[in-house]
Amino acid sequence: INYQRRMKGNLTAEASLTTEQVSQIEQDEKGAIEIAVVIHDESGQEPIVCCMDWAWVTKKTAIK
Image (cartoon, rainbow, N blue to C red):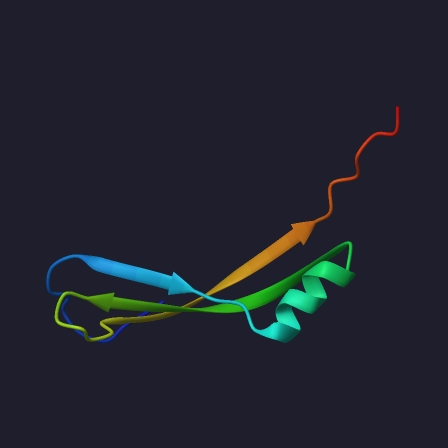
């Protein structure tokens, strides 16, 4: 997280995956990716720049 300036009002955060990241998640049983997060305040500015490290492991379902 990099704080760019003082925040004004409420914050809204949005993270999104690229097409390549979605494909990787669908194809690989486990892995990790870095996801960019865009954070805006009430003025419409981006007071914070950050990214998120996200990891996953596919849950195997039991066969009955």
